[in-house]
Amino acid sequence: MREQIQQINEIMKEVLAITNKKEGVCLYMGALLFAQIHDHFDLKPRFVTGSLTLYDKLVFAHKPIKPVFSGGSDFSGLWDGHAWVEVDNYIFDASIFWTIYSSKIPLELQSLFNYAFDGKHDYLIGSRTFLEKSGVVYKVFEELSDSDANILINSGFNAGIFDRII
Image 1 (spheres, rainbow, N blue to C red):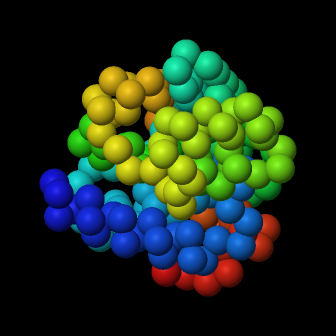
Image 2: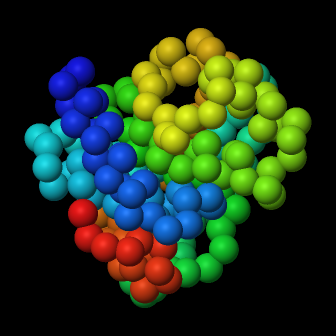
Image 3: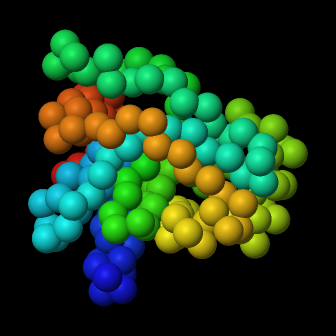
């Protein structure tokens, strides 16, 4: 799995490189990362939404998104939740630090992240077990499908979130 993590790390860098707006776009970045992992590896990635807590402090609550995709149309609305990709008990979160260190997040929460992760980073890759032992708890509420991811990727291009194809 170590080699695949390194390769996914490179894909995350590519996703970030083509993303124009990096904060608050976890659904779009997660969808693109999920699709890239699904297409390039013999792995079973999960594109999920849920809540995130850090040291028992709620960072992101869960708000259901799955019903939005039932119509199969474009999604470019606001959503108050969090999304990430999981593969074999590893969490891949391309947008977390961009969102946390944006001007919309209280400095207290930014300081907490700075302490927990020893500074600012571009993205998060970590084993669920290690993260939970460290006080970082990702709780899954929904698993999104390939078609949900496709809607989000297309919506991301239509909204100008992505500037080119990987």
